[in-house]
Length: 333
Ligand SMILES: [Zn+2]
Figure 1 (tube, rainbow, N blue to C red):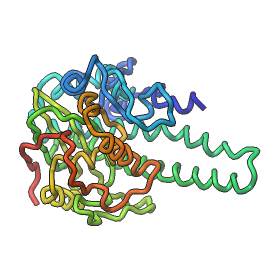
Figure 2: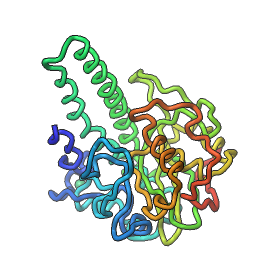
Figure 3: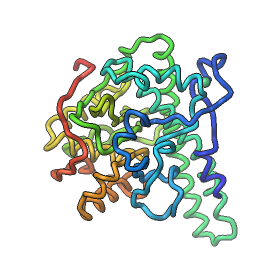
């Protein structure tokens, strides 16, 4: 069981090998999905940040409070070879983020590479669940098989969607036609206290309205949103990106963000509820009240072990995680 649960940490492959196989190095590196040098260092205390993310924890899997993780390990996945990790991402890793559609595209490409890597690693874990009904009574067997179908089915659906989106991004990577994507860049005065990188389909807007129905029909791919929160050159950024063909619900979502009570706190709700790959400033977390800590921990469970309600992104609490400064649209309505 532990071998399967640890597959996220032991699987290795270069995500760029499907298009640039001849260039690949044999050496797979631990690629950071949130930059270590420009981002995680900004919020670390003694080289550590906090995370809820299970696969990067060494401690008790049953506790859902954030735990400390070293920034060499935080946010990493074994999803690129040495050559491609450097070649593809050095434009914004070795230089400052320049708010261009090119940099935003690279960030989304890395985000989806990581998400696909994680979801494919999960398949073995779900296979394990399927085998766990042996020797159980008939009702327990039915329950276990039902849970297996539920989790494995939705994981397979997501993999299918992500593969489709990844194919579109690979075409852009080759053609350099960065206009195939749309982005919103939220500029923050200082580095964010919460950093993350993820992609998913949003059900609800920041006003509680239904943004899109997400069905189990494999032919019906929902509109996906890539979410990244990071810092560069002493400032903070939250970059939201999507493919042109996913513009309808995402542009609608952004409208509800702009009219929300607080852009900063609304975005925190989005990141905590939608993202597992999330890293917190220990200093910021320690200074939150117990109520705020437990509310955020409950929010993190959304979509995982709890149902998500329509008001999931609605808040009037000030958490102080982001200092909103400005919004920049890399699209036209
Ligand atoms: Zn490679």
